Length: 139
Image (cartoon, rainbow, N blue to C red):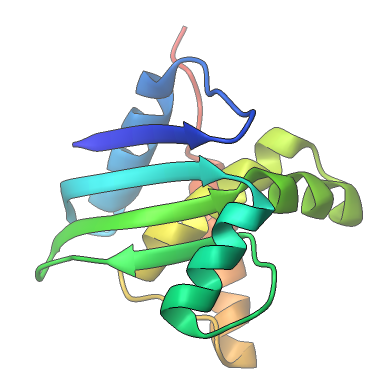
């Protein structure tokens, strides 16, 4: 089950479309869905989590807590909508595209993809682009 929680001004319309997309991402990598919660929040909210749980005093766009068991993916994905907006402006993409990138980034982390080394970052970006292209609404 995928649930969406809103602790910022963002409200996603048609959450079923996002749930379907995330489910298809998991299936495309041979994973199954457990319980996945996306929490859209402010910079301040995410900064407090970053300090409390990761001992980092920096702003970030995403923090993922992994509760997966084998090939069943479960977790909490916290996303700062303020960071998403700033990054969209910084990289010259629209907000929706950057939001999809960050949402896919979180689920890719839960599937074991990393982003600590240059080669991992390159692979993660390729996977994000691949998964973003999977987002569509059937007519």
